[in-house]
Length: 484
Image 1 (cartoon, helix red, strand yellow):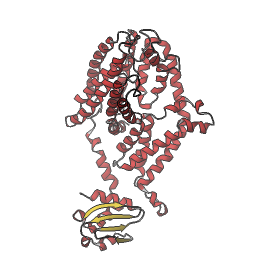
Image 2: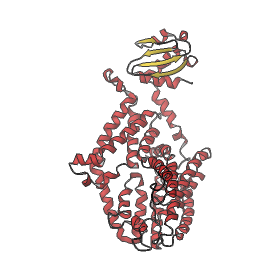
Image 3: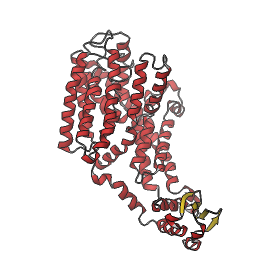
Image 4: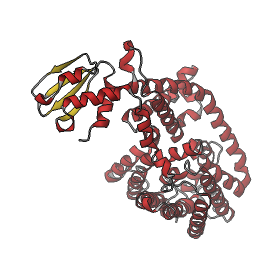
C-alpha cells in the first residue's frame, strides 16, 4: 500500500503541475474585477474563464493524469481509458441521470450528486483505468474479436467497471454526504472549537471531495450560518461572522508555501531543480490566490501522515482565529487578493492579526514539515525511492518479455532494412503501413517467413505488411526497436 500511494502521488504530479497556471489566471482576473468576476471587464472575464477551464475540470485532469502515470508503459491508451472511466460515472451520477434512475424530479435529487465531479472521482477513475490497462493491454481475444484485443479492450473494460462502481456510489455517496452535513450542523454549535474541528475535517476530506458537504453547512445557507455571504453583505456580528473563513488565510498564504519550501529543501540533490519549479509556482499561487491543491496533492498520497499533520494545523489555525475573534473573508479562496479586498469591510475584525498568525504558522509549518520529512523519511516530491523511479522501465521490459510478437517485429523490421531504410511506421486495422528510402533494400522473403499473410507494394517508397487484426502488437514492438 505504501509503495502504491507513492506511485499515486508521483502520477498526480503531471496534472498538479497545471494547477498553478489556473490559479494565477483566476487571481489576476479576480483582482481586475473583484465584484463582477468578469461582468465589468472583458479582460477579467477572459482570464477568469481561462483559469476556470482548468480548475473546474480538475477531476478530468486527475482521471487522465493518474491513468497515464500509473500505467506500466505510459501509453496514451491508458489516459483515454481514464477519461472514459470518468465520463461514465460523471454522466451516470449526474443529477439529471439520477432523477431518471430514481423516478423523481431533478430538484429532489440528493445534493451529493451535484458534487460528483470532484477530484476523488477523477482519481478513482484513473486508478481503475490504470489497473485494467496494466492487466489487459496485452490480452489477445479470439480471432473473431481480435480487433478489440489489447489496448482497444481497456476503454471498454473501464466503462463497464465504472458502471458497476457507479451503481455502488448511487447508494453509498449520498449516505456519506448527508452524514457529513449532519455532522457539520452538530459541530456548528461548539463555537471556536467547532471552527477548529471544521478546519481539520475540511482539509482531511479534500482527497475525497466530501469537504463540499461541510463547506455547504458553514459557508452557505444549509444550516442558517451562511458565513461567506453574511460577511460580505455586512449581515452578522463583528468578530463572529467570518470565523469559518479567517483561519484559512494563515494556512493558505503562509503555512503551505512554507511547507513547499521545506519539501524543496529536503528533496534529493539530483531532483531539487525539478521540485523547485513546481513548488515555487504552487507556493506563489497559494499565497496570492489561496489555491492550495498544487501543494496538497503533491504530498497527500505520497506522505499521508504528513497530510494529517497539515489537517491538524489547519484546525488549530481556525480555532485560534475564532477564539480571538480575528475575522476576514473570501469570495474565492484564502489568498492575498481576498485578504486585501476584505480588510476594510465592516465585519472584518483585527485582520492584521491574521498576518501575524500567518507568519507564526509559516515558521511552524516549515520547521515541522522539515523535521517530520527527514525524521520519518516521508516520500515527498523529490524524495521517491530510486527503485520506484526506475520501476516503469523495468515493468516495460518485463511486460514485453516472452512476447511472441517481439520476434516477428524484429524479423519484419530487419527485412524492411532497419533504421537505415525505414523512415516511418504506422498501422491500420490489419496492416503495417511503412515508408522506406529504397524499395530494393526490402527483403520480402524474410518478411514473409514470419508467417504474415502477404505484402502489398503501393508506391516507390510505400509498402504494406499484412499482419491481421493483431497488427497493433507487432507495431508496438517495432516502435520499441526503432531508434529514429
